Length: 221
Image 1: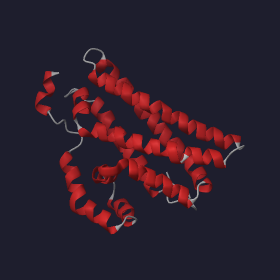
Image 2: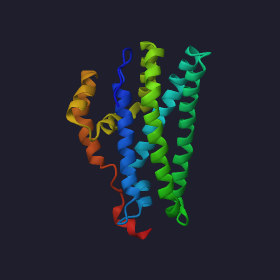
Image 3: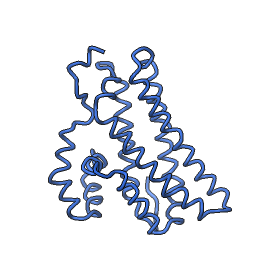
């Protein structure tokens, strides 16, 4: 999905959205498997924890640094404020879904029956939110937020990622084409690029994030 943005660089916004979509696809494939208990995969593979963490960081940063700033700037403009309210409401649906999925993963009795429906709902709701934001809200951000306010949002995300940068960047760049990787890395300081190329990417690949860490015990559940 592409738009003509005149004020703000949306490269990283689209990159994180694409990473979230990629993980939604992977989660959907895992829960459709019949050769291994999906609960075991999701509860032991690091991929589920990374997905939850980086999704929550992204949404919380928007909740703190984007929507309140825009609401103040757009006071009295009812249609724009209604869009922002929709964005916040869509965010509000996601955290309970993540909690419900975690509860299903821990429930040996009814968990297996509930898991597929819950992950299907997550796929639908989060995917629809990302599409809605890209279709309508990003253009409004572009004409409403200043460069400083956009930088404040980026800084909020970096602060919340903190020491997980070594996993966050290769996670975000996982499975995207080389031209996009080069474009994203080209916007970053050289030390960060070097850390990614020389250390972080290999360490992330070694995590093999969607392989259960105790696969030999998977049939015991």
